[in-house]
Length: 311
Ligand SMILES: Nc1ncnc2c1ncn2[C@@H]1O[C@H](COP(=O)(O)OP(=O)(O)O)[C@@H](O)[C@H]1O
Ligand SMILES: [Mg+2]
Image 1 (spheres, protein in one colour):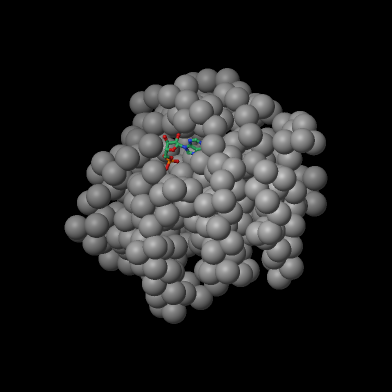
Image 2 (tube, protein in one colour):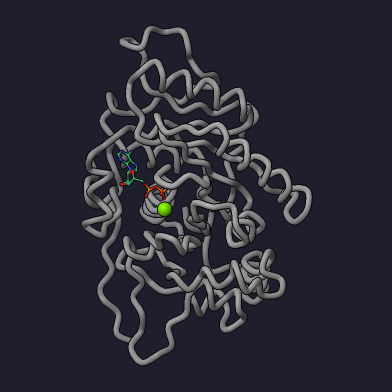
């Protein structure tokens, strides 16, 4: 197998003035001119331990799902964790275009679809990216076959593949964290992703909040909790393309009331974030000084405790 050299993802040093303050309750009172951006970490929240599966989900397109998956993956990989991202979006497959899988020559190319149709294991459908510590299960348009052919056990396919992999690995599963980038729909593949997840991470674009979309996401999460995955919870809401307005803070206050146990993270609007996919690099590498890279870095640290073994 010919492997391209992999680029290490940088550690960030965020200037104190750019840091988000970590608070236990959202400050809705300070006038916005004087207010500093903050991450809300409820007192009930406990950071997760690896091994962990996160599902980045919101059926609205353009909410920041793929960006959130890429940047959290990059932050955890920079911290020495072994990270896998799974592209579960056949409509855009933006993740597989952003983080190009490095396929070996002269071997069949598998994808998430192959896992649903029992053509290979999850490990066989996982490929390196150009970035150290981040591997990917890619997808293409043919993932939509899952929706209309409905292979047996599809709802449980990703969960079963992860369990099988963990069993085969014995003591130490091959990845500390798996991030699934869901499609802008609540179809079968999204249900399979939620069935495999420990935490749902919900990006909401400030200005693009859609109450109907949030309500149907909530219904789907509740029915997955009841039927296929009782441990699933909403771990965090990311308010993406955040700006310093009263509206943004009202939205944050509402979200913190609707999800009292979730971490609420503003990810500041940054042109660099929008440019990075075109450069085929995580924002963290493309623009390490951007507020978006820094905000995701801080969120990643709040969320996942580094295991002793790799500390
Ligand atoms: N913090 C941000 N600031 C500015 N633009 C952003 C930010 N986060 C995401 N974007 C841009 O918003 C668009 C939608 O984001 P994306 O992650 O692709 O959403 P989704 O996967 O939910 O469709 C993309 O063009 C992306 O580059
Ligand atoms: Mg996307």
